[in-house]
Image (cartoon, rainbow, N blue to C red; front, side):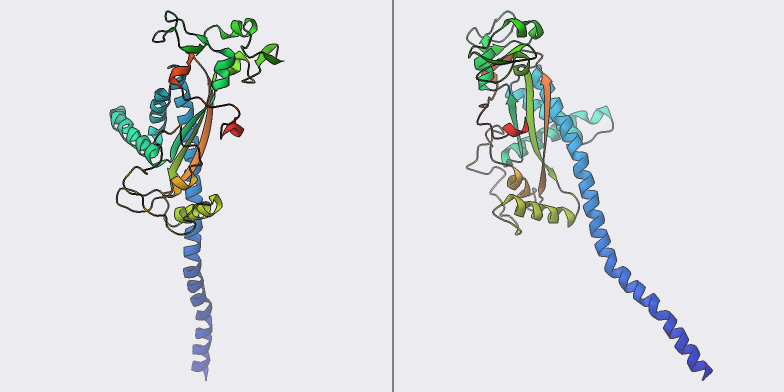
Amino acid sequence: MRRLCYHRRRWTRRVPGGFSIVESLVALPILLFFGFVVVQIGLLWHAKFALSHAALVAARHASLHHGSDQSIRDGVVLGLFPLVRPIKTASGLGSALFHSSLEVSQGIALGWIRWEVLSPTRQSFQDWGSPADPVLSPGASAQEIEIPAHGVAGLANRLRPHSGMVSSHQGLPVGTSSGQTLIEANNLKLFLQVGVPLQMPLAGQLLARALSVWAGCSFGVSRPERPIGIIRFGLDADPNRLHPSIECRSLATFDGEGRWRPRWPLSAAAVVQMQTNARQGVMVLRDRQQSPTNSAQ
């Protein structure tokens, strides 16, 4: 009898330990999944700061080159290389810029990189543009229209907008067409959107599927169809022409081996003062009233 009770007591003591192991095995995948989600959100938060830096670098680079679209693209390449290919020594800078250029070219072709100049607009040049002086502005023809950048603080009090003055702001005239003062028209406002890779397994794909449903993408919770080649034929590869949102383009991205690698669309904006005259002929200008991202100003 004593031996039986001993074994019975011994068996009852082992029951809680067995259930604990089962509960741990059930809870571990759930905890691991939520851990992946937290890490993925942290990576996206880090990418947001990197993208803000890239937008600022692109805007500064463009401000030194009359706001040209090519200078914006070069600035995006310079600004994104820490995110695309981080380096530890100066010897790896060339390789990092090369891979960043490839990433930007691929993103433009597939539609998950786009940018837009929010200011100056067409109306800004209508109010504050004037014929360029080839002596003071090298590379410009006499027929080129520019917004002056040098001595703008003094010019802002003397110049009057060509479309007429609708009001004043801090004592400076505001143009009827642009709704800007000369100083505001001299600020380069850049809006940049980039699809950032979702790197964490399972968590990234779940976030991508949730966003695809929220954004109303055609593929929804199913896997998107793989495009033919690297360029989506029928779409303009100019990043300034891609007016629709880039959510679905980012989420429907495949790698070179044909595997679905969704990207999370992030955006950033930067405002810098032009260091050279904004030149109408080299900029991709938006209409002030019809800009699709006008609310981001």
